[in-house]
Length: 122
Length: 108
Image 1 (cartoon, rainbow over the protein chains, first blue to last red):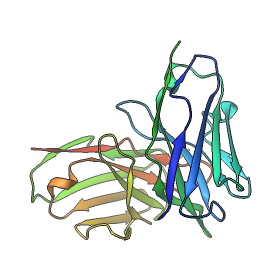
Image 2 (tube, rainbow over the protein chains, first blue to last red):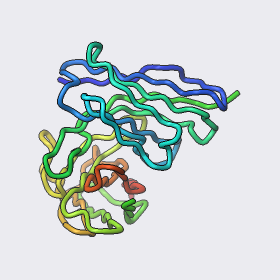
Image 3 (cartoon, rainbow over the protein chains, first blue to last red):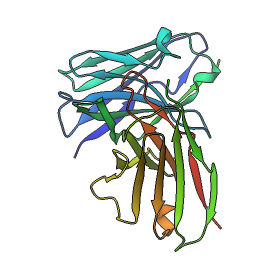
């Protein structure tokens, strides 16, 4: 059974960089797309971006200038960096898996991590 | 970007009711739509993909329909475990994946 686990600081200061890692267990990180998705308290879901195991990425245009997603296949991990954070970046951050699709490239999110709350505050 | 609009935002229903949630896309997404269920403090769970395909292990009382710009999620007989928030998500545009705003199903 594939499991995803987010890890990283729960508190980040304004203007600093938020860094999270997602560790994949029970399966290989190869051959899938891996996303970061966030949910501000009491609000809806926002896709941040994804990375293919080979390293190709796609980011939400509204966050693209501040986001970097990377993958480490040797550790079965992928990571998120979000720079210049503000209070608006306070959210539960989820990592999730998608199967590749030959028509639309990336499929829906079939496995999710439990989520980790990141608060931006001084 | 493709905007997804769900209605209603909140729905009050009783156990045993038939419930329908609507999701509209700002442009055609063919059948590239997924539905998720989220309970408080938990990650979303995939229910339906490709508009009408039931994810493995999901009860058959859940069904999805639609194509193009209008989609529905139906729960044929609402169970106590189904009180949750439901989200639609389009994956027609691989460069920008988007979710609907959510529909909270509450106990009447």
